[in-house]
Image (cartoon, rainbow, N blue to C red; front, side, top):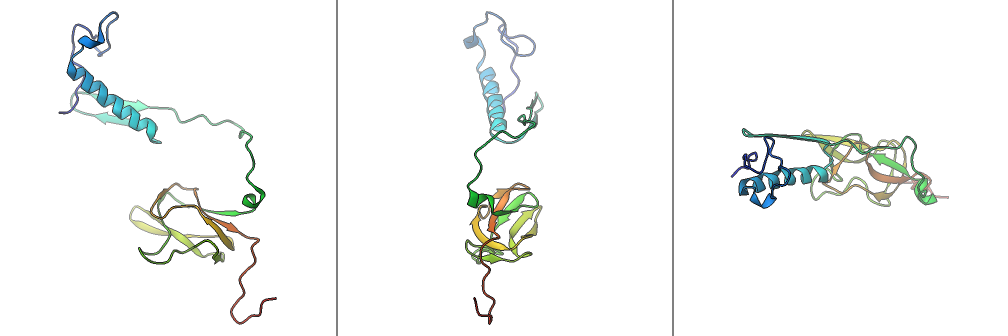
Length: 178
């Protein structure tokens, strides 16, 4: 049964609000179902990052709108990341979508911790609207951490991989290392 709007009763006014002095336990069971359905929708909106949701049914329309969280004009002071972490370069997602660390299921990932990546190397794939987009690094460095989880939804600008540009470069084949 689909929840409908509150039915008028002697305890409620035209918009379904309880009248002053009315006892809530006298409201009908259908009213409780409707209220529970609205409460469930509101809870889901609050748990998500949605700022506006509209639900329309033949008997009623519900629109939930909330303000995005306020951002201060200046960033709040926080503890700076450890020195080693500050010197790392982040490879960020160029668009929102599902991140894949490997070209196909069961294949080796594009980047693993300890791998050396040159500028232009592929770090992973992001699927958006049924199109797979290569994510490439703009800088060379050793992979210190793969932040994104394979198969997870990532937002544009989210860190996928951390690179250490100051790590020693690997020796090229045939060239003796000093």
